[in-house]
Image 1 (cartoon, rainbow, N blue to C red):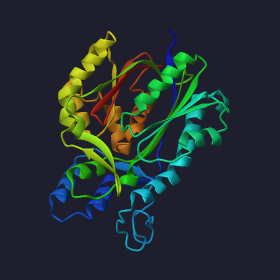
Image 2: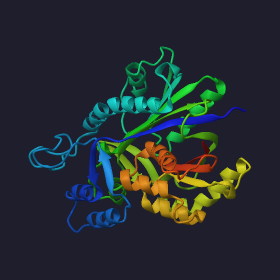
Image 3: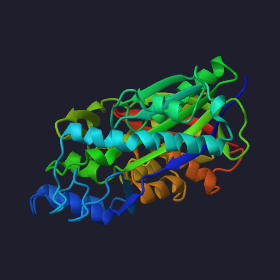
Image 4: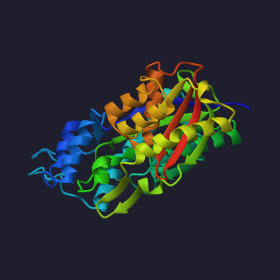
Length: 366
């Protein structure tokens, strides 16, 4: 059976980059001095494993503050409404979706008229016509291009999108599917006296990544899509969830998530590999979604991996933080670019999200 390939992974971040300690100071300022949340914040930021995060928010200093999230005169946090936050998302996301799609096309070697399907992914904002429409219009894609959007699935959503792309290629051998994941998580950051919100506020950032999926072998570095599967960790639904609040999208991110994954990831991985006739011994590389430093630590320990096994995941976490659905594509690209994933090697890619859902794919570097 012909293989499906991932071409030209293109990671993109907004121009505004902030040191992790500065973000901590900004989100800590409205909290009760000496309170539980404020004390937890110091500990979480100090141990985050993150050095820098990018954001579409242009600044917080008095005189240069963006005016939506921070008061222009005082720099104080404004706590904008969900509507204001979504407006900020739309303004930044529309051009960023198009720019990311364009870069993926350039890297892949495909032309605009080659693309038969567009799949966009996001859980941090809404607008219609959606990003798929603007990508097709602004890049001059063919008039009969099929368009789909995967929404509100969280950090694991790149996998359902790539699985859709693989199915399109199986049904239509000439298919070329443009997949773009974009998340602007920082438009929902809100200082709150809640542990879940402190933890969420310490890891999430903004970024996007595009990739083209087709039956054509890539001219440069890429991946062959070998297999994929999905599982739900038992009794874990309450540990990770999203809801729409009056002051942005609220993330429930329990401190138990790393321990839940650590306790169950070995069984999940072995079951997934067994279902396709493989075992851990067959895996050369591990590409794990860096939901947070503690998550990587627990997964590494549970699977008994050597200290450098998750180097691409830790590098992405340090430079960018958690970019939700786009993050695993950043990790895949990092592994190829740095030579961590070499041609012929089998890589196990994994991401986690609400549910607690565990999505996995076996990829062969080419």
